[in-house]
Length: 111
Image (cartoon, rainbow, N blue to C red):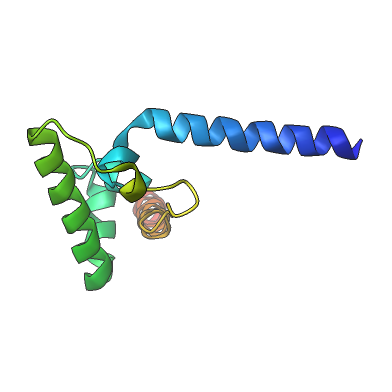
């Protein structure tokens, strides 16, 4: 029983790492939330609410990725974003904006 749990956990982890590395954005130093659609109104508002330090770090990663893409190059493997280091820094803000928008739409619909 415990062995099966460990095997499932390992396979899930191994599959996650494989899929993460296959996506390619980590080879440019980007995080998952850097790839969100910047033209979505919810993401625009979430980016506006993001602390300046996080926004600056995000802009640096995106500019570096653009430069690497123009050069048709990738970062050295030691500088790739690792799955363990990647975090959803923007997702909580986006979720909050969506909840507020849905609440506002519900309010406007009822009143």
